[in-house]
Length: 230
Length: 353
Image (cartoon, rainbow over the protein chains, first blue to last red):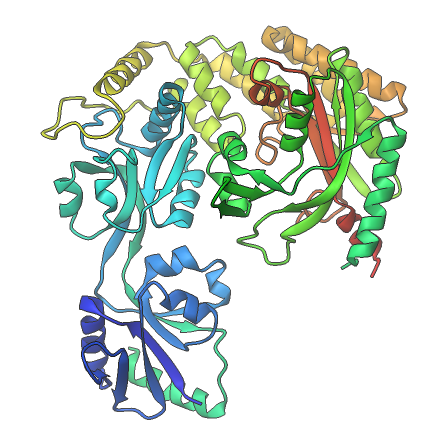
């Protein structure tokens, strides 16, 4: 047996994760060719590196197939119901900051808040005969947020990418997506609602509460956590 | 947990009871087109219902309840008065509480009747009370029609009344709207000057201009007066045995004449229930009962809860849904009331293994 550590398989998130572990005396590196998703861990024995899509890491942790995982809080909140029972937050890692926000066209001068959005949605439905469309891939988070804030007469349209473009393309009237600087929103003539911050997200190290461990695994886990946690 | 055979047997005996009371047993498909249900319940239903994609038929849903298909069937049949009963599975996703079932059996009764609303209310409630008389349950009643009547009668603008009406089933939002319309929360200072951004999207410049005009009109409108607000609060706070609640409502109607007809209806329903042996001194009534859990009900509502077990779901619940028949019947509508029992919960309660 061994401890499986799941981290994002590419991009800045992977590199920053490598740096974060390196600063704590754990060397993570990819092995084989550039295209091969294989990795190795130096500085500790008994830890396996598993390279995964960031979006799959929450599911793998919940299913107990990996013991530790690095991914965004947004993905964990979106994908895992009753997460306190299956996952423990170990440590925010100080990078990958992004906010899940709700945005509408900048020209909607009459819509600054969720309350405005609700009223605009009612009028929109009466005028167009269908519910105001909000494009997002964060279905659960957006739905819960809007329900808690009393917004009705909307519908969620699934959008897995280029979400900011959906309003101009007239496949949605508003969007909910991750933003870090807001540049993409501005470039697409969108503004964030005053109370449109749904979730602040950050790359975070999580521990699965469901992954099986024997005594040897527990010893390795303790040794690893002693090294990397403050 | 009771096993499925026991639950089905209990469901059949409950359905037989409804048949004996004159209801026609109907069978309905499990797979329902999602469009109607989504249109009716909005996005929230996606969080609770299993939705799937069919390449030919589009989005389909495992039925989350029977009421909508029963109403559709009835409206298509062209019949006027009718009584129906049914039994079968309903499906609800459970995102927060794994101990709650995501598939369970419901037995239901629906009554379409134009002639005498209080009598139909009483007939339905009494049928459920009799079917459940051996279980140790606490009946609860309410009437959404009272609050709706009060809102309709409010001295304020049409648009404010419509906004309140739209959020009758969302008590927190309803309260926030009342606070705003009465000036209890101060109005925001708004800036409608044109931004340096091009127009994008389907919501047109005319729609934006119209809403700015509405906001200006709303800002100029007189606040809902403190007296009216206090009357609504008095209405929402009524919670007493049915007979006492009717007296309190009668008193309130002297100051709030808009609810007089709704109070008369509720009182007539009480008399009809009493005539069928219901003890009104022992039947709880609360104006706010059923407001957040039972959307689309717009009149009498009832539920049967397990004694001293607040975390159990209601074993049975129902209510009047006149507006739903108008919505689904396009041009036709017919007053309707119905309810469901969960035989699985009944058996669990009896300790059957």
